[in-house]
Structure formats: structure tokens, C-alpha cells
Length: 558
RNA sequence: UGGGCCGUAGCCAAGCGGUAAGGCAGCGGGUUUUGAUCCCGUCAUGCGAAGGUUCGAAUCCUUCCGGCCCAGCCA
Image (cartoon, rainbow, N blue to C red; front, side, top):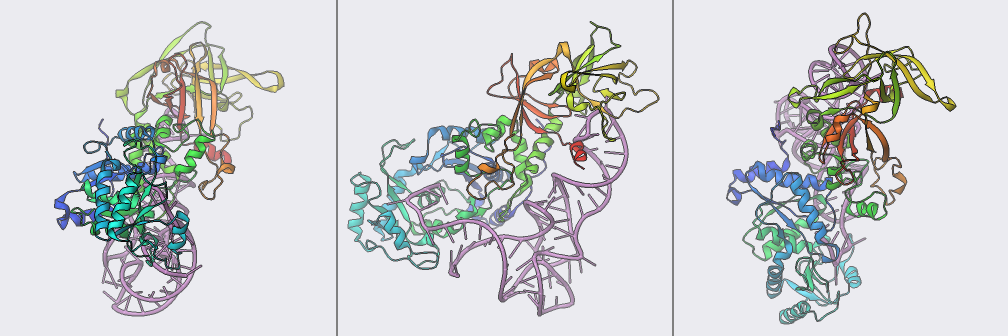
């Protein structure tokens, strides 16, 4: 497992941390946290955040907590908690100590809220949500004070306790921080910090019927956990003054520094939990782990490796500019990994029968081929050769263009790991469809160049009688448009051929031993992995992770 | 039109007053029993624009232009 990892690149957050360390802030500690809300599956965007937070902890010999930001029980569930833990582990990271939950601190949040009320910095407000919106003002106009803003401290205390005891309806009252209704920053206009919700929480059951809001709970959780750098995405930039206000007002010992970075956008991809959920709910894909999904679970099932995702995250960098990364970058990361680590094999996706007329019927030869062209330590595999073979229909053309160097009438081609053959005859069936090719082989070309001529083309093949029928699922991008995320309706940009199932592909027999987790390069086709869900030992199913780069396809387009 | 951010090549991204790193993609070439990989070369007289300061500006100042985010009792 010696990955030739070069040092991960620096970024503006590391510059800040370097400065903090130099100034001896936080006793030289670096402590981050990854704080997902368990309300959906993690996706590539989260991978960026995970790699950033855990990566920084690693690089500075610090710690990174996994903390579930579970303050909104209505949308959360343990199913998500489980999947998130698994995904973080799969990516190769280890969180500090036990898993944390914001809900672990519900009592402390409550006590701090009482302290806020006692110091006159919070009040119970009886405005309905609609009224509260009106009182909030607009982007250009200041808000108005709530009629309850100057309620007596004692009364606030009693009301807040009654809220906790479940004496009121959902939404009847809220607890609000007393900040500034005329602030140009809307987040500072007396934000709600507690709401009444008589619902069961996946961690705390029916212990509570009031739940804290993100802005209030998040900063306190960070402070309780002695986090030093609280990294979040750009949309929270406007919330930073509030983050600081709570910690300052509560005179918390620890005051983590919030730093915002740009979330990941990928073209041809949707990365919004809501839209991903729609895709799953509408059956556009087969589930959260469908290999076309940009979820960690989807990428895993598609055949992406944890290392490739980590390298991708290193490659895209961390900045504050709102950018769109090319999907090609992700594909490069997995090709790069698998090129050096995936053993090679041959698999014919669209079989076309070839009869080697000068090869004796019933004879078999067992040829040897390297599992990897540059890594002999991966060993060799045996490949049977016989009179009847399959090649791919795409590797034969009756009237080829000039630069086509595969098989054509009276032309020669190299069978990968085997002999050079020449196409002598084309046999067609009804409708003029090519049904079979009659070829002759040159028995002096095994491991040798043919004499007196050059054969440029090399194609893959498999022996008919030895072939292993397998199912191959060819996955492609889910969307045809670069920005399916723009606008509300992504349906029109769905790629109808994002999955093409090949029921009877013919694989070389050595593949029969493949097990879950096996990854291969099917030579001249792409990288494939055994499907972790549907593949059976007697009925292997391969998922195409990514195709090989194909400069012939480009040439054809010209 | 209030507030907060962001503009460096097709995309991502270094750069922090001394004369534009790197990666992806592209293009050209070499090696090759994978049209893959690998290797070599090429790709911003230019840093959103215009002014200014300076011997010297992507870096400092001014103005303008463009983009993103914020009016949930979501996170």
C-alpha cells in the first residue's frame, strides 16, 4: 500500500492556520470537525469538505471530529447517520474519539439559553412565523422590534421553561436572540434560536419538544468540542457575525474561528441534496447508491477508489471563488489510479464470430499474458486460443476509412496477446448484416512482429468455447447539459442513455474468479468493477467505472 | 437599490511590489502487441475594465463592470 502521494497542495486556509500556529494561538492545536446533517446521503461535494477537514487535521497532527448536526429531527434519520459514518470511513479517515452529535449538547444549549435570557440577551417571542417575516424587514429596509422584545426577564424565563415542558403548540412561541433589528445583515435581526417541535428525535427520542437552530447550536458545539478552525461553505459567511456574537455574549472559553470556502460544483452533475432526493424518489435512478449518482455510495459502487477521490480533492484546490470543476478532472483521477493498479483483461462487448480457417478444429493453445504491462509483479494469466473466436463488431469494417487500422477485408490485425490474423471472407446473414468472418492466422507472429510488413492495429478477442458470458453495465453521465443544476427543471437534460446494459458480453475465462471489489481494465474499453449488489458468482455483473481515453473517437468525428 | 463575498487561459488553481507555477482539457510529435499508459513539445506581452501611485503593479489606491449568497421557527 505504498501510494506515491506527493504533499497535498497548500491553500488559503492553511495559510491562516500557519499564521495562527506562528502566533501560538490555540496552544498550537489544530482541531477541525466535519458536521453533516443526517438528512441525506453524502455526495462529492461533501467529499471535498471531508478531505479538507480531515486532511488538515492529518497534516497538522491535529484532530478532526465527526459531529452530526442533528438539530432538525423532522428531516433526519438513523439511516443517514449510518451511511454517513460508512462513507467517511470508506474515504479512509478516522475521526477523533467517539462520534459526536449536536443532540449530545441539548441540555447545555438549554442552559446557555437560560443564561442568555437572564442577561437580557434573549426573549420569548409570540409572533407567528408570518408576522416575524413582516417584522424582519427586507434587504433594503430595516426590521421592526417585536412587541415582545422588552418582555421582563422573569416572564421570559417562565415562558421558556413552559416551552420546554410542552405547554404550547408548535410555532406558538420562539426564543429569539436580542441583537439588532436594524442590522443590514438580516441574520442579526433577532434570529430565532429555539423553536417548538413536538416530534421524536432519532437520538433523544421524546426528551425534547424544543429544538435549537443551526446558528445557535453550531458555534456552541464547536466551542464545547474545543474546535480551533470551523470550516464551512461560503453561504455561511453572513452568519459569521452571529457565530461570534453567541460565543462572545456567552463568554465561552473557547472561540473557534469560522472560515468559509467555496463548495464544489461539478459540470454535468447535480449536487443539491434536494435534487438528488428527487432523482431517487422519482425513480430516475435505482437508489442513492446507483452508480450514476454523485453520492459517495454511488461513486463507490461505480468503482471509484477512495484514493482517487482524495486525489481529486487535492487537485481541485480550496478557494473562495465560486467555480465549476470539469467532470473530466474526476475521471482523470480514477483513470490515473486504475491505470497503475487495475489488472488487465479482455472482454468483448459486442461479439462477432471469427473462424480461423487454418487453425485445426478441436485444438487449443494456452497463451500467457501479463496482468499489467508495466508491473510484472502482478503476474500472468492464461488465455485459451482456439479456432473460433469473438472479436468486437466495432473492430471490423467492410469499407474502412483510410486511418482505420483494425480488421477489414483482406487486411491484417494483431490479436492482443496472440497472433496476427487476416480477414479472407465476410459472411453475411439476412439483411446484409455481417454474421461471421473467416480469417487465417500467421503462426509465426506469436510474440514476434510479422515478417516483411507492418501491422499497426491490435484488437481484443476471446475464444468462443472458453468465453465467460457476463453482464456489463455501461454507465455514462446522468445529464447531457453542463449545468443541469441551473433552473429548477433538470428533467429535460437527463441523458437517456446513462445506462446501457450488455446482457451477453464475452469475457476471458480468467475473470470467472472475480469477487466483489475486483476492478479491471478491460483492454481498449475502460475500467470495470464487479457490481457489489447484483453480481453473483455464477452470473457476474460488471459496472463500467470510466472508459479509456479514446483518440480514435475524436479522429472519427473530424 | 442594503449587507457579505468573488473575478488570473476552455476548466481548476499558484501568486502576497521585482517582470505570470502546476494540473485537467486541447493541439503537434515520439515510444507502444491497449488508437490506453508513458515521454517530448505547444498552449495568458496577459491577470474583469479604465485611470492613478511607483524605477517597476496580477499584487497598492480610485472608479466602473460582471458573477455568487442572504429576507426558513432549514442546515
